[in-house]
Structures are given as structure tokens and as C-alpha cells.
Image (cartoon, rainbow, N blue to C red; front, side):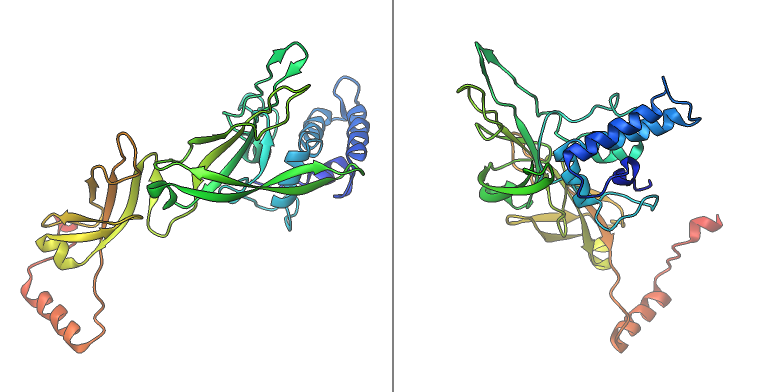
Length: 317
């Protein structure tokens, strides 16, 4: 996927005001609109202009794009980092796949789900009172938080337009109670922390979508936990009971006799807490000790002589 420079597409500077972006878009729309343009590539150019305007005319998308795009150049190979949009506070529901069909893969990859499927507008009318819109943000938590619950201080980046019409990133910090057993994709709703209501109506809510930071050993899928478990050759060959460290505490696991690398063991009920809890899935990886001492080399040489074992025997039958 190639990086797109939306400022270059509209022909404006990176510090352009909202009014300058609007004027540039209108000028290009008059030039390339297929109904009036005589340019041979008018339709394609108009799609590119519409896409650039959809990002740069929206303070939230523009702020996120500016931060993500630092140091990148148009046409270079580009992949956004995982969870690049975590910590941004957005309004609205984002774009559905049908709504991004006329935009590039670059746009769909960055903004196709921005705002989140759960972040509805919730405009409720009671006379002239309108309840505030819900806001949405993705937050990255430590996996350990789900095992005990915690209160964490979370900072969100909030784009705003200054008096000159330029986008600035502000920050707001909240103390958030993380419930025990929270899992990736779950929503934590903070009542009244969204957009303010109109004429005294209640404020909207802030919806925090939970994702986990990368962990040194574990990967979460729903409530299940996955990890690669290194085992010694004798543990795999003879069977063993070993202690496996979890984010909170340890669990004893039986390695069956004759286990091979790649075999998966399921330990029920030792995943993320819940009703019911998830499982722990262990992918065995047999690790060979190095032949780095004379004694170790002697043991390997003894095995080579006395064990009738050929790992490639099946290839020759």
C-alpha cells in the first residue's frame, strides 16, 4: 500500500487553515467534476480530491493523519502500525465498507473503522433539548489488568480547531476503572464524558474500546490466552509436570509422554476471567540444550550412537 499525501493532492501547505482547505477543495472540484470537466482523468482526480478533503476537512481525521504521516512521502510503501489510532478521541460512527468503496485502500485501512461501531450519535430530542453525542476511543491496557481489575489514568488526544482555523491536539486525562475480566473489543462506557448536551440536556457518553498491549509471552483471543511453551527434550520424551507462569499466579501443566513441537495443550479455565472463564492454550516448542561443553557433547554423541532415531526416515519410504 502506498502512502498518500493529501496536502499535495489539494495543493495546500501542511499548516493550512480550515478555510484554505475548503477553498482549495472547491477550486479543484470545479476543475475535475466529471459533469463539467474536460480533463481525460477527471473522474479519478475527483475521487482523489474527495478523499483528501474527507480527511483534511475533518479535524479528528486530520490530526490523526498528521501524526501518523510524519516522515512519510507520497508513493512510498506504507503500513500503519498496529493500533496506531489508540488514544485518539473521536466522534461519530466511522465509515462502513460501502462508504469507503470510492476511496483508496490507504483511506479504508486508516479510517474505515475510526469512531467504532459502538459510537452512535444518540441524539435524543425533548423539546429543544438534544442529548450530547457519544464519543469513542481505543485504549491499550496491560493484560495483567484484566486478572485483578484496576484503576488506570488514561490520557486521550483530542483534536481542536484554534482561532486561526488550524488543528491542534489537546489532551484530557481520566481515571478509569478497569473491570476484572475485561477482554479485547469490550466497551467501557463512561457516562457523561462525551459531547455536552444542548439547552441543558445530558451529555453523551465516552465509549472506550479495550485492546491489549503486546505481551512478552501471551496473546489474547476473546477470553482465551495463547502462549508458546518451551520444553526440554526429556520433558517432551518422558512426560513431565511443569509450572507455567500466568499473568497472575502459576498453574501446573502435564506434558504428555512423546510430545512433539507444535502440539497444543488446552488448560481449561485458566484464560481471562469471566462467566465462564477462557482457556489457556499452550503450543509446545521442544528446545535443545547447546553442545557448548565437553560433557554436553559427550551426551549428544552417546545419543547419536545408541538411539536408533532418524528424523527424516519418512522422507525415504
